[in-house]
Length: 145
Image (cartoon, rainbow, N blue to C red; front, side, top):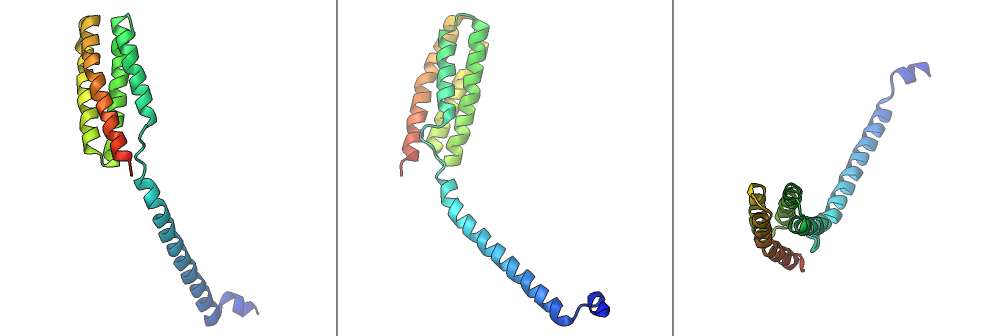
């Protein structure tokens, strides 16, 4: 018996190889099934109301209403980063029109950091808000089945 433990028989090697092949085949099939099931779910990640949109909208509103120029510029910068994230969301959704509009709004808001007065900053942000609204509408249109 000691000799069989040290030198397993050819049959036991083949049995373990068959088991390994079977396990690999099962893993491959399960992996393929998992990919087939999750691919449509990942492709439909185009949310009509991504959470970033609410944050960006709130930051735009705060930038317009803030009394201190430096604080308003901070809110505008937050809104710009949110708009950049939303452009990325639109890109992943395959919605080029929404992406372009988010990028245009982001570019407009970027000018807020150069504003020298509250009035100038408000004008910049007020111009960007309709662009943002149009981009959200485009994203909603892309999200429709």
